[in-house]
Length: 104
Image (cartoon, rainbow, N blue to C red; front, side, top):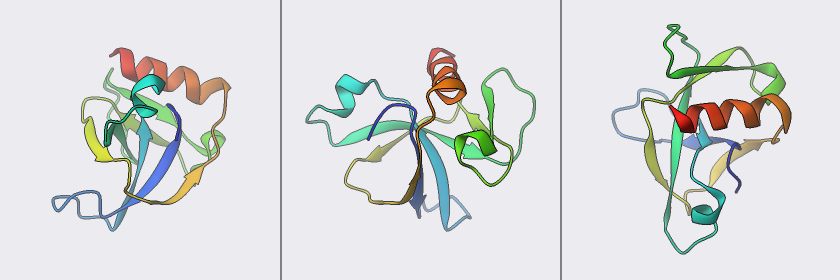
């Protein structure tokens, strides 16, 4: 698990109508590798409202279509929660996007 990686998580919360949702890890790597049992994540939605707290991502990052990271909806998810799948980490744009998201 690394900062900036995308994970599709099954049943992320009872309030979420979707069976699974993609999240991006925003915790610092030092905390990810620590004994803390959770990581801070930002959800990815297919809706983009043009807000400054939303970062565009898409096919280049391993998603099926253009989406956006909603940096104003951070959640804490357990590390032990197994992802359904993880998209490959792409050094260029996704790293820049996650740094931008984490700094908002």
